[in-house]
Length: 453
Picture 1 (cartoon, helix red, strand yellow):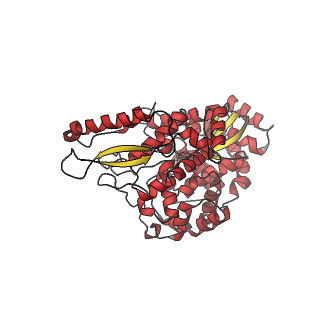
Picture 2: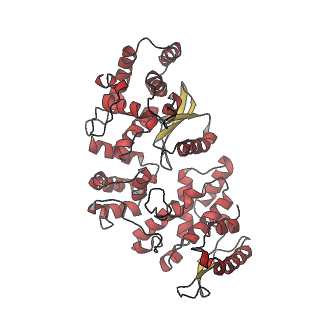
Picture 3: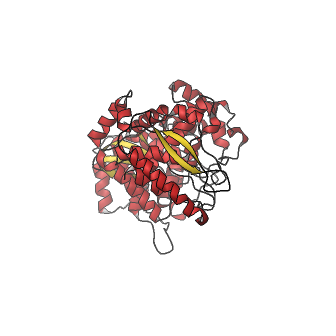
């Protein structure tokens, strides 16, 4: 999609009465965009026309937004050529390259940002440039428009989000210009995200974490110091948690998840490594006899090292203990659906993004959220390169066991509900392996005997 069509598709008249007056403005914008459709110099200005504050809708005010050719900017910026080369080689950008790209773009227009109010169409304009140069990227990664309370399915307003928004906010926090981080008006008010007074912007640890990602040892210090804030806060969902703690977008932040878990449950940190294999053997003994298919899988696992056994062991658990829950009154969750909510397999790296979209589509079809899960490359008995997917972030691991351990711990750190299809498996792991009991545990009859193992 070219930039002009994208921006025009994002424009929605505020009400029917102003539609005719706004049409002339759209035509003017279209002409300006057509004029600037060719690569332009970095000091060129793009002019947007908006309805003025007067009651007369024919009055417009002009504001200027710095136009630039994104490819030229990257070719002349430190690290920019590596982004172009990475995309040319792989046909996608990983999270690290997306962060670098966002950093280069926002720093390029920083002077404008601190001197002028940045508008949603500005974010749309930048995002359109990114998609134009990198067409396989998702626009939502970089900017998603806010949702009004009236339009929201949850009945609550949702603030604008995306890497561009987060980067602007972080830079302005860093240089003391916090109030300009997002445009505010009567339709898109930013509401307090938590109920705890300690989560206000005045907390120095929170401010520092929103503005900095290095040095990493300082990140750890501020993260530990702000633990009580996260523990006491109330979040609507995982995305809400990540929105408030953007440092979690950093690919190193799986370490922060483990830190919070250890602070919550200081005795349970190593239990996955100590207890999982022992528990699995007890489960097999309890559930004899097994089907031929399960027996064959168990025998095949004996030839693998402990790390590579885990996906097969989780698979056997879901087969021995199939889900009892329902998608709706007529349809039950399948064993495969339970397994897919824990981990999925792909053949190679190029299949990862499509698999993520498949997970999102399946969840949306069943009107369910996408909770943390793993992506493994290869086959069930020969897989590697684990990725932990939480919200829109992918954490990379060298060890399958550490990836599973971090995923299970993330549910407790984020106060996230277990996937409905595999909630019984998660509860078994919570109680039998991590030795954690909570008042929210929903003990289903068909696993009651398992919880005593």
